[in-house]
Amino acid sequence: MNRRNFIENTAKAALIMAAGSSTWAVAACKVGSQAGALVFTQLPLPYRYDALEPHIDALTMEIHYSRHHAAYVKNVNEAIAAEGIAYADEASFFANSSKLSAKARNNGGGAWNHNFFWQVMKPGGGGSPAGKVADALNAAFGSFEKFKEQFNAAAMGRFGSGWAWLVIDNGKLKIGSTPNQDNPLMDVSEFKGTPLLALDVWEHAYYLKYQNKRNEYVAAWWNVINWDEVAKRLK
Ligand code: MN3
Image (tube, rainbow, N blue to C red; front, top):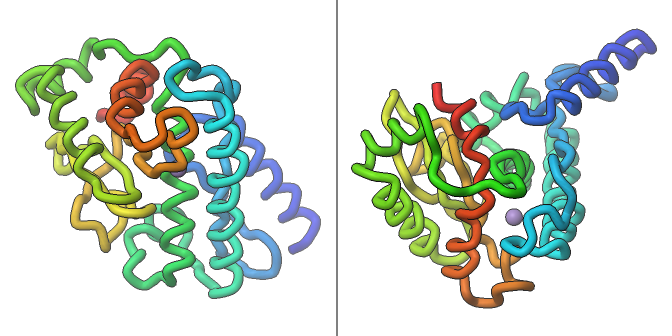
């Protein structure tokens, strides 16, 4: 990479980091010797580790962000480099996940899913959504309470590690879950759509505070949802 490319790429990465809440948090630029290689970026956490207390504790947030999430980002970028994966952006990467190695698929999902998850939470969040989100949830599920019930069932019904999602698919809101670090953007996923809201139900997301009581973690999480971010994604 020559000096000019390096400067352009650095500037692009800085813009992406500054964008912060971008769903597509990726520097689709040329890095190193591999032209066209995709690079996943770990977005800055938009609040302090202790900001979601008491619902999500500071130590869980610190370990989750600085170790688990950071490792997914590092590992997917290693896999991309080692395997010569050359998709231009994350959308193509996930649309072709059936062709990826387990390392690329699992860590790519982990990198993206956590970037998304941090954005859809905030201190002092929760409550009932207003405006177009409320309208869309009422239209799709009958009421906000019914939406909550169905989302909780998806989160509780996912056996082992995975994620619960609210997505929009061809204009229709749907609730579902995915195993491991799969997400609804992946061609291999049985549950597909554009994510609007996500909940990490891996034990690493709650075990320190809630131990085996996933239901208490899920109940507490409703207090930190950032409905503004959901509204932004609801087109
Ligand atoms: Mn996690």
